[in-house]
Length: 71
Image (cartoon, rainbow, N blue to C red; front, side, top):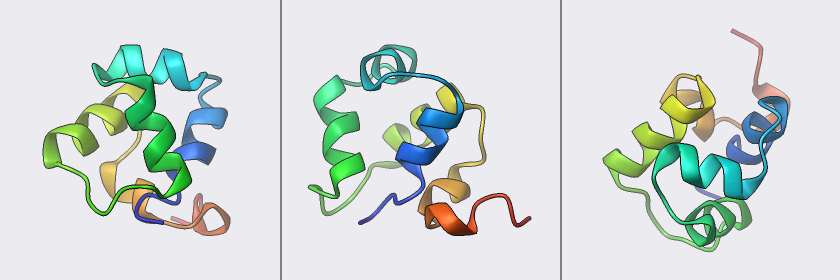
């Protein structure tokens, strides 16, 4: 999974996939596919948009859920 921290960051933010997609300016399918690991890469623009919408550092989205918060 390319962005293993995405789903946990989204749920911590209290957002649905649709809400995150709207806030980030991407499709809900994009959010779903990234959460499910169904993509082989992520553009810098998409990564930054997701991180900005979630109010997290983009690098944290690459961390497994159990490693988040151990800053």
